[in-house]
Length: 155
Ligand SMILES: Cc1cc2nc3c(=O)[nH]c(=O)nc-3n(C[C@H](O)[C@H](O)[C@H](O)COP(=O)(O)O)c2cc1C
Image 1 (tube, protein in one colour):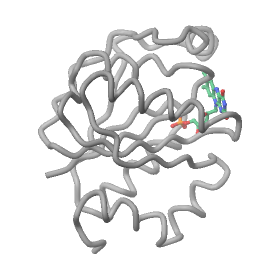
Image 2: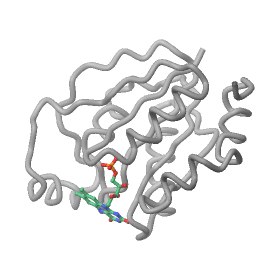
Image 3: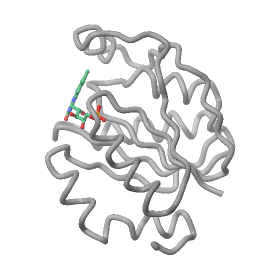
């Protein structure tokens, strides 16, 4: 079994998460911070590596998880919090990060390491520029790696 988890502030990562969930008929769950903060506060927090913020409990039931989230400077605290909570321990994870176009590779590798340290196995990673979200989704190739990861054919 597999499911899609996402955090999204301006909707790009949600767009990807929803498209994957729809394509593979998976459940999609949102990571929701307990506090609703304005942009300048998130921006400030995104400069602090490894910082988490309280998030509402997310129930993960599947052994395979596609995790979609944005690149935020050095850290996306709601996602860091979820990973640190150990919720993804023992799961196989495919990471998808949407970003503006600045230093995404390093950020994704950092999250992959964090997940592995917390007992998850990262089996795939993908960066998507926010300006290319729709193009990427309409290119069937995007779903090929996911299809392998999920062990499921695209409908
Ligand atoms: C607090 C904050 C920090 C960001 N930092 C970066 C960054 O360092 N590099 C980058 O390419 N984009 C950065 N962005 C842009 C987002 O990664 C990009 O718009 C992403 O697609 C947003 O995803 P979302 O719509 O799912 O929230 C940042 C956005 C925010 C809100």
